Amino acid sequence: MNALNTTQVWIAIGLTVAGCYLVKLAGLLVPAQTLERPLVQRLAALLPVALLAALTAQQTFATGTSLTVDARAAGVAAAALALVLRAPFLVVVGAAVAVTAGVRALGG
Image 1 (tube, rainbow, N blue to C red):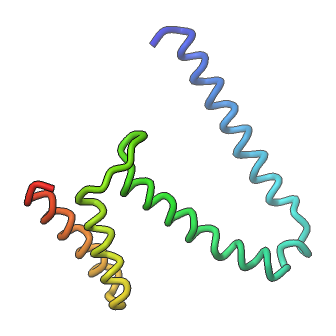
Image 2: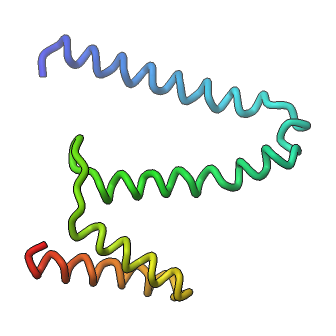
């Protein structure tokens, strides 16, 4: 890595640090009345679930910039089935791992 790239990396790190601090500061400056509204509370409860679902979908069905359906999709389907059957969390994870490994072993 040459000096220019190192400088650019440190500038990016500094901007990221400043941005994170400003986002946190903005969150602290929100008036309490705003946070007590039912709509805001409902959105705050649902937002982590939506973000996790989006991350799971992206990690499951994307390879680089292309759409891919492979063994990972079978594992997610197995986990979804286990969740529908109200299985404990470790069983859900175990089912996803076992199905993904099984499909990969069969050549998928």
